[in-house]
Length: 257
Image 1 (spheres, helix red, strand yellow):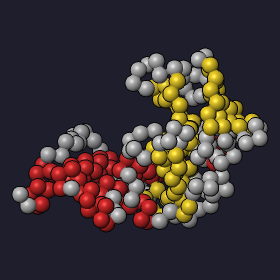
Image 2 (image 1 turned 60 degrees about the vertical axis):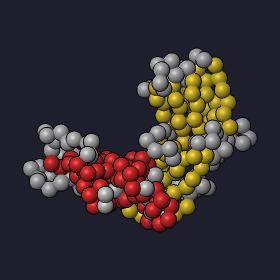
Image 3 (image 1 turned 180 degrees about the vertical axis):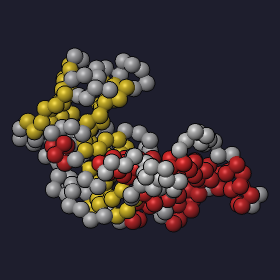
Image 4 (image 1 turned 90 degrees about the vertical axis):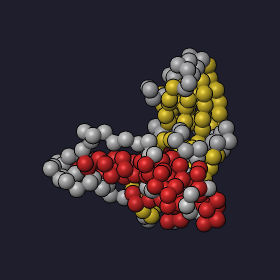
């Protein structure tokens, strides 16, 4: 079977079904989501992974690259040594889950801007044009490891610094620099069972340890590279960030699920 016939079958077998009641302005994003699944199928069937290795271009990220653009900004460089200016090649090479999440920020930011201007979040009232968010401005990128050795990508998107596990649709957290300094870029999610919670946090270079305390005791975690992860029984408690001299840089309660 030639590639054209196989691609046609992949499109016909696309498992994403658009809700018939969905507003037309929402469909461009959903269509790209459907395209991404087609791309994943094509990678599995056609061996696009080999092409990616040869070309250095990520076929997953390309589906969402229209919603990302390289931008110049000083955000993050004073607090994160791992960051460097982003390039278009960096954006084209992002893992699929990270590219999708970064593109979603573009939709969120455009929606907020529209609301501030008294418009509906998804554009002009009565418009038949598909909703097109302003591209998310990515100014910096970095690659670090969490305290448990998980690879993590750092992105500066507009005025936020985001941390994404490189495994794809996994843990992620975003925050502005002043919020990160206050220990507010920490997320809690429930694990496979209600008796466990997953903590994923982003801190600046000044934080070398965090203490997580709660009903199930206290743990001190070394944070070599800005990101920490922890699985614990209790979803409540307090996180304290410490400098290399033991100074308390922040103390904040864990957010509620």
